[in-house]
Amino acid sequence: MAQVHVPANSYCYTKLKYLHYGLGSISKLPETVKSLGASRAMILTGKSLAKVPIFEDISKALGPVHVASFTEIGQHSAIADIKAVLEIIKEKNADLLIALGGGSPTDATKAISYYMNQSTGQGFLKIIAIPTTLSAAEYTQIAGYTNEEGHKVGVIDPELAPDAVILDGNLTAYTPARLWLSSGIRALDHGVETLYRQPTVAFPVIELALASIPQLFVNLLKSHADPSDLEARQQLLNAAYLSLSPNLWLNPFAFGLSHSLGHKIGSTYHIPHGITSCLTLAKSVALKARHSDPYSQENLTRAVKRLKAEIGDVLPAVTAANEPEASRGGVILSQYIEDLIERLGLSTTLAEWKVPKSDLEDIAKMIAGDGAAGDEGQPSVIQVHELLKSI
Image (cartoon, rainbow, N blue to C red; front, side, top):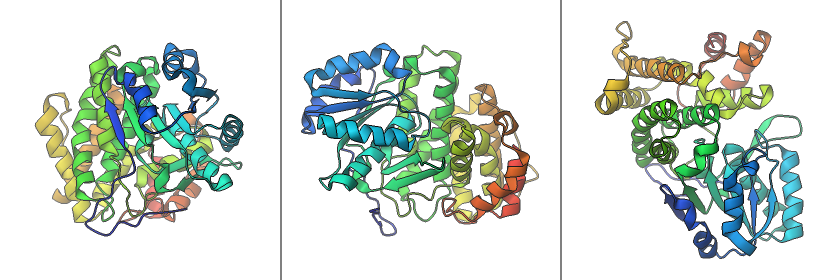
């Protein structure tokens, strides 16, 4: 797998060429296809989206360029689906993949492009991502999928990053409320965990992540209160971009503790991506606040200050008076996150997802020794085990 090693104090963009955003921006799809030099497009999505009008509208907008569809992409992008699509692409001679939906269709599309190049040696396929959730998978060059053994694995190559992304809040109106809101917590997970990934994260990424956090908080609450508020939906799509802005970092698999836990429990126990963040993010932030380097602790404190300055009127009254000053900001942030998840009606437990208590220690051992945790101050097995027992 090809990786780009970006030197310290440097920033490198992905190959994303077009980012269209705003209500009605889906109208730019045909011209985007043409600009990418593609002529045979295949749409990939899941069963639910295939049944709503936007799927048919996109197909009609493409006209004769649309040569095939695959509407069976499931949760966590199964390898069986990926192999099935590879055969269709070869049969139809498709040169462009359009990922419509959440993280699973997008990850599957990237994995398909990877394996298509592996099998033919003729290069990667063009990709346009049209997200209808807030998972932000469309901004990375990583493709996560589930292998034959049911384990979450991934491939990476700079060429896997989509060539174009279209963010149209109108298209999210059919996304189920729980999926929409929980994927917003996933975006929040991206933004927050970016803050303690020193030294692999360039300063523009840190600043954009900090900007995303208040926008996600306030617009998730607006969208929950009024699901028909399309402007709030658009602002959430924009904030998801900020939370995981396109960049080629040193170790793309090294995110943070919450992501590592989510990868382990998600595919194993069939827990959706967004819900894994609802389970793990707040507790992970509290642990990182208490056991991290000063740079990361300061970033977490900056996030709290920004939240108070921009949306203080919607935040709960919480304190952490007994915490040392260095960890206080991060602990307060964890409480804000926990309160947000509760207000969105997304609070849940590992027991509700039938994760056996007897499995928790083994999960902790995998995480504590997993390069995917990857941040400084990597937690111990005991710390992760205690965290899991508290969820």
